Length: 413
Image (cartoon, rainbow, N blue to C red; front, side, top):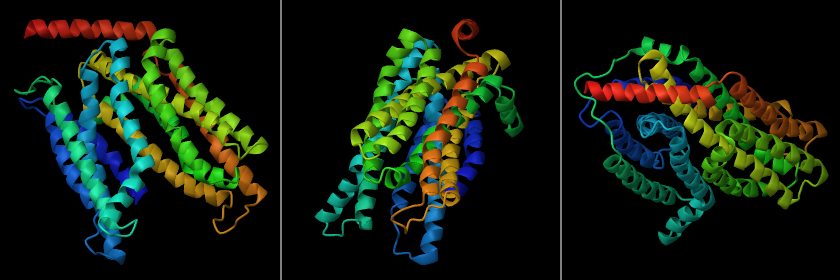
């Protein structure tokens, strides 16, 4: 179900980007879809945690349909949200500071749900006299999340400025033109490569982590320690603007790729020398997560730079189509990593019923958890350094051309 939903996103995300870019209203093109998507996604999100007494095949069919609808309605609000960000400023230094804010709170939300979610669900059920994992707790918690979701998005919609897009201003594009926006922009193609490979690095680690700690380290509860190091990712996001200002964004991405490589290599060594040492696991995983936080900061700025480059190069500003590639890539990496996790476990002969796995399985999990993600991180670094050129003087030139373009448009008005 997860894989099919992500494949559908291959069509869903770019089409939504095209719809947003073709929207013309007096309220702009972002806030209208952000509002609609939030309300639709909120309703579907609650339905996702309601079974209505269904069982067996009918329940599986219901969950599958609602889950796919959840992904579609989430896209309706997610694409315009991230498309809006590049329009707040075209100054590279300001973008480094602004981009941290949404990424930080996204990581914070993920950390809170992973850490406290089940306890909150249990609390709802206990107060209602239900079993610990009863459906009631999930539905109530989903309802609380929806209220927070609507309130916080309302704050954004009511307070962030956006110019009107009425009167047919701008060039409307169809599906063929949308494909050309993606394929003709070489910087976007390079960005797709570096983002996809780094996302695969992180998602593969998350996919195999629980099996690695259980089989290689002999302590599956170390996975909880690994999840707690998500705080290091948030710290990396907070530090990103300061580090980028000190050593440049280019060197920051080098650091973003190097830290996961070092962290995973050390984790692999620890898995042989001292596999159950929780302190060493924390140190290794913190290096990995801190690098992931830096990468999130860099790539959020990169997508905004790619949008500016596209407007300067081709004369059209297609924020939503370009940003939709980012959301699609993240979902694709999750789907691919999830599919590969199942295939990888079969290849190395993992058997959940066995308390002790074979040496081949143990070494196979080491390779899948350590060697493969390291390879992906190296690929991401090479693509960034060799293929992605919106750095240094070239990006300064793009920014200057953008400012001149904005001044010319202002004079025309």
